[in-house]
Amino acid sequence: MKRLLFCSAILLVAACASTSPYGPAAKSGAMGYDSLQIEADRFRVSYTDTDAAKARDRALLRAAEITLEQGKDWFEVTNSYSSDDTASPSGSRTSISIGGSTGSYGRSSVGMGVGFGIPLGSSSSGKATEVLEIMIGAGEKPDRPNVYDARSVDINLRGAATS
Image (cartoon, rainbow, N blue to C red; front, side, top):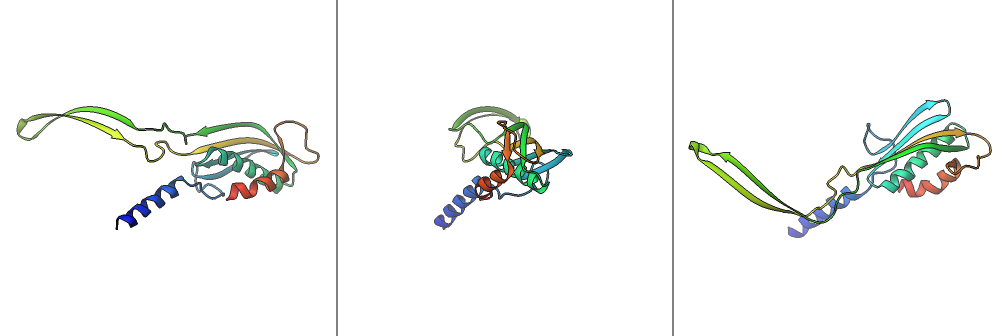
């Protein structure tokens, strides 16, 4: 029985630590991608994941998909920002708390406790979101540092981002 309980706990922790599969977000703020067309050739792409590096790669992959869906060849990241709530302080914490209350029959009591916590997982929301604003274009790729060839990004990131 103890072995079964221990194995179940390990599986639960592993499930919480894994990233979600590549795909659209079920709702705003959920894991996955979200896309919004801003103008004819401008889009805002975001990806939320439990891992900041995967969120970045998956946002780039989604930008490449949109570019190819629109019949274009390249995209330029004109603006980007990240929100990373996956980091949390590690180690244990101690705390002391004092409280008071009035018991039954008018008696008063004061309590004092000492707590010791061992973090088993992230105490934060565990989400990282990468937001890219992109401009898409056709023809020869401009020679600027934030311009990506959509086919190359799709080929290079599809296997890594979708696994």
